Structures are given as C-alpha cells and as structure tokens.
Image (cartoon, rainbow over all chains, first blue to last red; front, side, top):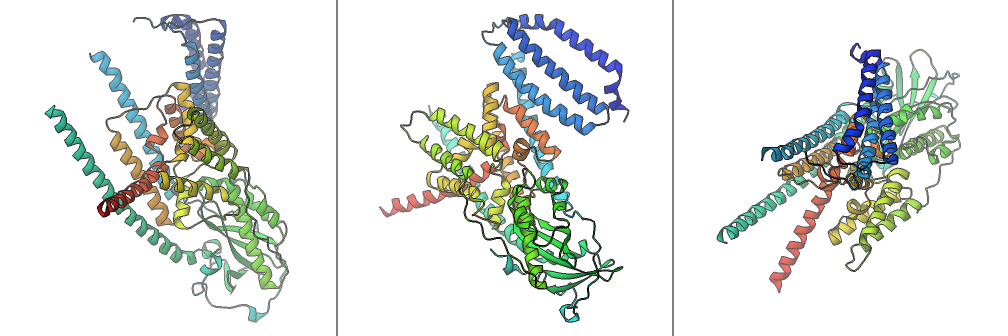
Length: 103
Length: 77
Length: 404
C-alpha cells in the first residue's frame, strides 16, 4: 500500500521533528497563557509525558509503515489511551493553583 | 451570547456522536458474532493404524440419517 | 400559580401514561422471550443430527453407528476401522460437545468440536492456542483426568476443562464398548474458594453501607469498588456478563460444585434485588463500573444530562433485548454478548470490542460511567426485574388496602 509508506519516508519524520521542536519551544508560552505555575518537577513530568507521546506515535506509525498495520494500530490505540489518561492526571497536577487569565 | 452557546452546542454534538459510535460498534459486534461462524474443527494429522478385523455382528449397517445421534436423556445432569 | 399546577398535572399524566406503556411493553417482551426460548430449543434439537458428515464426508468415509454415540469409521482407501465417540460437558456458556476419533489401539487421533456455546473470542482463543493438539496421541485414559483439572489456556479455563471432560466421557464410552478398563473421574466436591468468600464479603459490605446509621459509607464503597476492580476484574476475570444471564435463562446451569461463584453472584443479586429493590453489584463492586469510576475520579467526570436521555435509555434496552432474543433463538448464550469486559480485563475480544473499549475509556475521563448509563446490557435486565417487583408490590399493597 502506497499510502502507509509515508510513515517510513524521511520527509515525514523531518516534519514531525520540526513539530516537536515547535511544541517544546512554545511550551513556556502556553504555560504562561494558561496561567500554570510551573517549576522544575512539573516541567520534568510534562517532558516525560511528551516523550511517552512521541514514542507512542513513532512506534505505532513505524509499525504501520513497515506493513504491520494491525500491530501498529493496536500499539497506537493502547498507548494513546494510556497517554490520554496520564495527560489528564498531569493536567490535574499542573492546574493546581492555576490563575485563569483573561482572553 | 452566540460565543457562549457554541461550546455547549459543540459539546452536545460530540456527546451524541460518541454515544452513536458506541451503539454502532456494539451493534456491529453483535452482527459479526452472528455472521462469522467459527470453524470449531482443528484437525490433527491422522495416524496410520494396523488393520484389525472386527466381528461382523458388531457392526450395525443402518444409515446415519435413521439413527438417533444424541440421546438427550443421557446428558441430563 | 395555576400555570405551575397545570404544568405539574400535565407532567404527572405524561409520567403515568409512560409507565403504563412501559408495563405493556414489559409484558409483551416477556411473551416474546418465552416464544424465542421455545423456538430456539426446538430448532437446536432438529439440527443436531446433521453435522457428522461435515467432519467425515460421504465421498471419503464410511460411517456406521455401533452403539449410542459411538460409530465405526472406515476410509475409502484403507480398510482399517477406526472408532468415533461423542462426549459432552458443561462449558462456560453451555454444553461443549466433541467428537473424538480413536485408532484400533484406542489412541486419540483427532478431536473435533461438534458444537459449543462459548463466546466466539474465547473459543477461538482456545483453538488458536492449539489446546486440542495436546490430546493427540494420548491413550484413551492417559492424563485426561489431569487435563480436566488443569488451566489449559489462560482466560478460557472453563472451556478447556469442558473439552477435556467431554473427551474423558467419550473415552469412557469407547472403553466400555471395546471391553477395556476405564475409571471415570469422581464428581467434584463443592469448592468454596477465595473467590466465593470475597464475593460473599462484598455482598455483605454493600448491604452494610445501606444501613442508615453507618458512618463510613463512602470509604466502604471505595473499598468494595477497588476489590471488585482488582480481584473480580483482573485477578479472577469473572465479571457478570450477558452470557452468564443467557446461560441461566436457557437452563445451561454450570456445575455448582466447581462454579459456586456464579451461583452466589446471580442468586445473591436476585435475592437482594427482589427483597430490597437495590442492585448491589452495579453500584458497589462491578469491575468495569469501578474502572470507570477510577477514570472519572482522575478526570473529574460529571454525569451528563441530555435532553434525549429517554431515547438513549430505550436504545440501551432495545440492544439488550435484541441480544437476549438472538441468544434464545440460536440457543447459544455466548453468541450475542457485546460487553467489553473480556477486552478490558483479559485482553480477549474482537477488534470492534477493543475500539469500543478505547472509546469508553476515553469518555469515562470526562463523563461519569458512560458504559453503565448508556450501553451496559445488565442494567436494562435489572430494571426489567425491578419493574415486575414494583408492580407486584403495588398489586399486593393495593389489595391489602382494599381489604382493610
């Protein structure tokens, strides 16, 4: 299948890498906009969660690209749900004493 | 006023969408179970056995369709 | 003021006519269920005699009945006469019937599953694990008793034991026919294990929390939910499923000596529901309910109040009703089960169930117990039984009132 080959093309992963870099660069500003009081361990937790998300996408999409579509979808499905649950927990931790900013 | 109503409306659409998708999945699972008959046979390779003759009178030659294959009472527990 | 009174009178009459409609629908459902049960039973009896040719087609084999559930088999090429014997044992969702092929020395050559009512995902799990291969080459009395007592395939223990037990029964028949010695496994003595004790404790705790003066209701409820999730869900993998209810409706009652847990669960629930009108299982220790509650706690889930709630409730009931009817008509308890519990706790299920599980898991973070509120088939069944209980009580108290 031609469409799934996109997940193993270098260009796709260059674009993904650029996206990740943009997200990491903008994280500081997002935290400020959302009124989050960040410190070193909150950044650490956020970083770990982001790494989990990146690895999930990388693993799942690579499996799909290597023609293991079913395995890739199961991998993505399972770990994305885990990432979502952990993301919600992370948000609850980060938003303690959150200052709601006017938009 | 519209800016406040829009998120609530969107929320309602999303919720109804989730519920509808869930019902569709459950219904499809039901349909799949009904239409996909699992082949319960898992044949093992047959082994060659030495020929042994049986007494003729031990073999009944009535056809398979005439015989009662299952004795219901035997399996009542 | 008059408008408010008028509005409440109008709402009252709407509720009354709705409950009347529900009652007539409930009666009609009962009749349809009875017809479906009877039809399913009759259909099953008539199709049982058709299938042996599916395993041994006429073009290749010659089959001759020798005795009750025993046949002699000859192939077209060889003149060797082999034996076929049928055996049956109680599986998870109903009887498992197998057909065993023996050679002249009574070694098992082949084993076919003639019919089974197990949930398709679990049966294919057993077949994919090649559990049946373990019987190949065994003597008619070699290790079958042991196989009947071992776990077999993880998560499908009951099915594996049923296959082994049915094979043992078939072997017993062959042994008797050919004059060979055979010692059958004795009937199991009732087992009250940790599973059963924990379940009884959970029922007891759930009733204690109902007491008006009991102070630690919230804490006890969380304790029972945690026990339900971890023990009943992940450790024992035995939540209440639609298959269990269908099996009981069809009279496929499992062996109480080895499946005491199911009897305690279903009869305990029925007893408490009929006497108090309460449903301890769903509220206090349903494993999947607990799973959703934990996720809801993490995500601060709230119950949703949809205007179309009534429609969704009836859709939930309709789906459950269709599933039960299908099971009764096909005389197969496991065929119409669409619950996600197997996928959640034992990672066993079809792709569709896993997708549904993912959707419910994500939704549970934001909406309180979406599966229980909108999809679970157990809830409509509980509501159905409760409706009959309420009506019976109304008739009873009405009669008493008239007499006094």
